[in-house]
Length: 265
Image 1 (cartoon, helix red, strand yellow):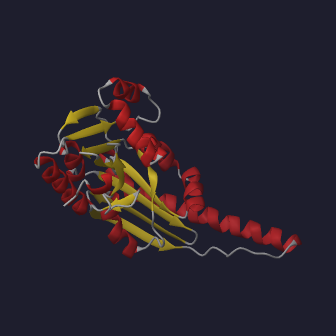
Image 2 (cartoon, helix red, strand yellow):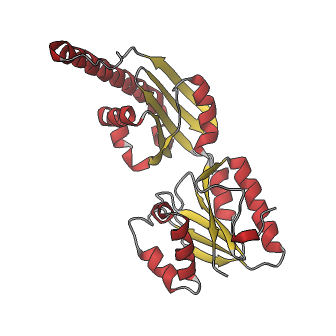
Image 3 (cartoon, one colour):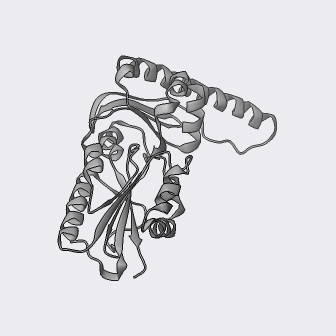
């Protein structure tokens, strides 16, 4: 049971990831805590919160609104910059802010525990295109909800970094850059073929792998450029883009991040 002890929920680290199943259990625990008679409230802020100050301005005008802003800011500046919005629950002097895996656009401050929008989001069967890229390996897939629908993984040799100097280093760099470019071209071709039948139904795109390699791939892949508006801002934490990783990604897509909150008595 979540408690009000020490004005916090000690079972969670700031930014801790919660699986969809665990998140559902936590929401049930929050409801039980509120049903004990302790005053409770729920705050929803939209995915546009970082670019649009209207939601914050409106909250500041509400009774108790400034205290919410203070609690969120003390928990971490990233909460009020979340590109997927946030849902925050308060029970007594303790609370929990949740960053959802997909954008939420509600703006509301309600009495009690209103977890239905978050539950509905987690129950949604979104169609998500996934591209995982590291030097020498890539994995392209489409998921229906948490289920893998189609996928393709492959490898392409890329030379390791070369530390010698002079002409040898320049020649090596050109060879390596060419190998990386061919990896991007091959992966982009696979992505086009795998995703084309799904384009009309694609809700989101999720990327993962080595940051520099992913960024380079995005610049090289025309389809990713066209889908930038539905590309999720976070990156999937995947060490090796292979079939074993793809078996885990479906659950990763629906993970939330939790941040304990506290209010002064």
